[in-house]
Amino acid sequence: MKAAAFFPATRSLQVVTDLAEPQITTPTGVKLRMIDVGVCGTDREVTHLTIGYPPAGSEYLVIGHEGIGEVIETGPEVTGLKPGDLAIPTVRRPCTDPHCRGCRSGRSDFCSTGKFTERGIMGIHGFMTERIVDEAEFLNPVPAELRHAGVLVEPLTIAEKSLLQAEQIQKRLPWGLDPAQCNCVVLGAGPVALLGALALRIRGFAVAVYSLEREPNPMADVLRAVDARYFSSQECSIEQLAEALGSIDLVYEATGAARFAFDVLRSVSPNGIFLMAGIPPHRPAAPYEIEELMRSLVYGNRCICGSVNASKIAFERAVEDLTAIHHKWPDALRSLITGRFPMERFSEPILQPTGIKNIIEITP
Ligand SMILES: [Zn+2]
Ligand SMILES: [Zn+2]
Image 1 (tube, rainbow, N blue to C red):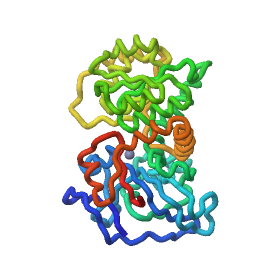
Image 2 (image 1 turned 60 degrees about the horizontal axis):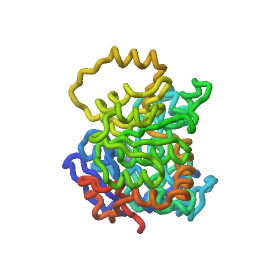
Image 3 (image 1 turned 60 degrees about the vertical axis):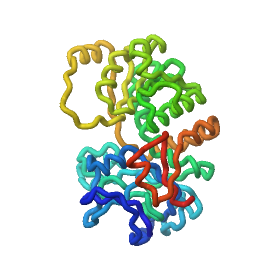
């Protein structure tokens, strides 16, 4: 069986052809024929050795964590999935520590030991291969109409988990997180940011995306099509942005640019929430006025919430939202996928990313 693999010892990306086809070994196992697998910055970081490692005893890691596949076989105790159905696997698998409350509650996205594994990233092979086997509990059914867009579900779950937390946290306000009274700013215009903007728009929030690139650019075109606004940080200061919007009640940060993020944080309105999903690179510490930051958090009831990974609940919401987006803005959704590559060329979009979202077609 063919698979797209990363060899850490030589830091090389190669298609391997000798991977054994996985077999169902439990009554609740499911075998999928992979259709599409998305490429993202995490794959690039794996090749930079910043994160990730192969399974024990393997000299390579099969990469790919944003996958959609078709069920071709199920164990005798599987319910809710049958051959022919489309399914999307979650990425993280729980740690084995009996004291980890997150993993023992079925919420490995809140794992507190850090000893979890992740398919295609940490210690387990990923989805950029012809067939995979996984437990039914880690698979999410998707409607057949999402066959060509379903690969966007996993990157959308990052925003969905953040939003679920924002909804919980803003219950502290008597009026909650009311889309009619909440101006949202998304930082960044990469796929995770744009999908976050779409998730907010489909829920009726006013959305402005604030990012580096000047207009015209394809990301701003996508946003215009869904009635979201676009502001370039090269043409509009944070103060001008705050003035243009009137208030900034929710920020979804998806750039990992720490200085930029904390500068925007100063303009968040009282009672606002700042969701951090981007991961900054390791750099020498930069000075920051922490007294002013702390004063602003306390006096303004402002809240910062970090969010990583996503649970099955976030996957279910992502499938629901992507279906609604597919119905309402089919062209905007389609225009997010800008490159399709065969497995033989999988290294190209990882090493030289272009466009918005690139995917590897496993089954064209
Ligand atoms: Zn990803
Ligand atoms: Zn855990």
